[in-house]
Amino acid sequence: MGEKQGHTPGLRYRWISGGAASAVAVKLDLAQYGPDAGPLIYIDTGSEHPDTERFLDDLEGWFGVAIQRVFSARYADTWAVWEGERFLRGPMGAACTKILKRHVREGLKIPASAPQIWGYTAEEGKRAETFRKHHFGEVTCVFPLIDQQVSKADCYALITRAGIKLPAPYLLGFDNNNCLPCVKAEGARYWNRIRRHFPDLFNRMAGLERDLGYALVRINKVGVFLDELDPEAGADDDTPEPISCGITCFIAEQNMGEAA
Image 1: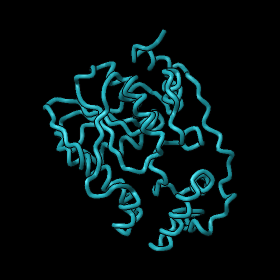
Image 2: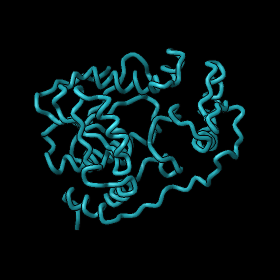
Image 3: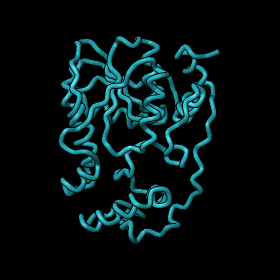
Image 4: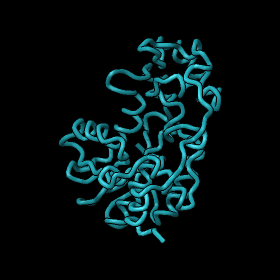
């Protein structure tokens, strides 16, 4: 892990994923507890869209607080993990998530009692509870967006209303600003979108799938290798989700202290 930081007991740990939801969750937490209550931390996997750095810089201006970057000292990016470990994903998750994110977080030696702020949205209550149960006794979870019923669409609107351009993958129709590509994705629609916008990544993954003998896409619960995937499967027009600010969005904006 790089850039190891010292920690003071009682701090809140605010995780920035590079996406809209975590940004809004952190903004809400900053408004409630202030910038001195704990660090803002971004785990750099080395595999995000280049526009993510621009987004992080914009967020620092919005927050008025610097974002700490930490990273794995073992692998430079997701491709190094997949090729080095000879593994993409399994029932327990993806190798890249475990090594590049979880192990890096564990290396920070955060006390189990310290609140950690996560960007699960109002639609993700079940996912958040699964995460909480999985890390019971190890992580004190705080979900500001769920607590305030802030949806993913609200997050897009709040970022846009703050004068910040959403990360490029959102504008290409992707649901998240995750690593590119993301091996946790099983849908034909996702992988054909990768094929259209990032053909080099698609072709590289197609080769790696064959090398490892594992197909990522699932169609009717059957694995389909990328080099056999119908380019029209899961077809869509890459239209981004509409951006609108409903009542929960306006309430969240007030809670940030940003409403006119």
